[in-house]
Image (cartoon, rainbow, N blue to C red; front, side, top):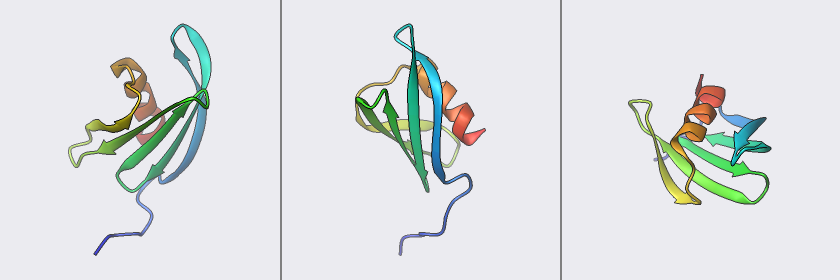
Length: 77
């Protein structure tokens, strides 16, 4: 059975990030242990949050480690 209760910090987030030397809008939707990331409405990626707090990409366009670290801090704390 799949747990469908909202996990801590589930929801939608929007903030600006520095990506490719430009300030872009980053939208993140957190659902359970998945982050759906959209940067500048054109770059889409999905990430799985592991039990140890690490995050691994499961689908979409590659995201630099520094950008992913910033997204993790904004969403997961």
